[in-house]
Length: 341
Image (tube, rainbow, N blue to C red; front, top):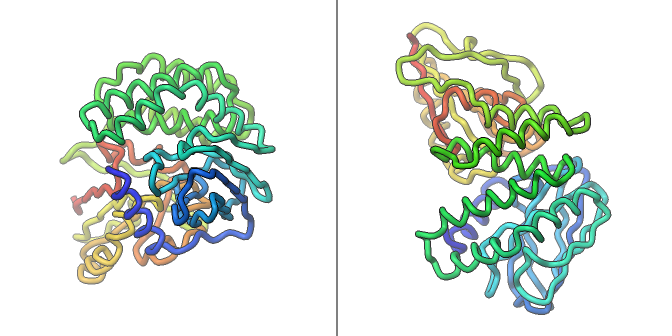
């Protein structure tokens, strides 16, 4: 996807979903004399980039709703800016400053009181050359080289992760790589990935059990269901925290449609009006169950989640313990139809 397509999708997503809801915020302040007036800067917590500012005299400021320490992203859309998302640690009531002298914002200086930012800085420094090569390929539109450079980039990240502390930043990076495994056939670095997963599990401090379980489920996925197999049930939760099972949805000759979706997925949200129409037309014949892939707090507090009229559930682990049984790829939206039989 080129920069214009990403930018257009981001604006459509922002317009569609509205602002994230939170009483706590983090602040990002940035400056570079190379940024043209009118350059858009988009940022957000987690995988949801939904806060926008416009550069004036090289400066921009973004106020990000954030409930806890999290890895966020920053993206600049303007003349001279690369097509690359820049990772930043965010925390309530903390201001992070990013400054540079050019438009290569992934390499700008980051001033932050958050210790985990140093983990991200070390990764960027270690992968500097390969990031530059990836940016060059994007600018030259040499798409034939993109897949191979992405694999090299992934390998570089895995190499440095083995030397870093286990914290929110390194776990987020390892989780991002683990999610890609579903879309990669014959991943050449699988043994290294398994060793990393084992090492992180052994070294991680308390409090990261859910993230470690998510990574484990991607590295060691459950057997995939195929057409004709009997459905597999699971413990799922609604937005109020009540426990549910798929078996509740079956009644008489009713079909069940599983809708795997995420807040950061524009097509997932743009399908909502059509899904609503199908749901209303086939009332009594079709039950729709949305399976969300975000963190519980993102899912529960986002305005789009509150618009869904069909069953809106989560496994509490960003889908990692459930979608592996049904989805043969990591892309969403993903739909699975279960018959009454």
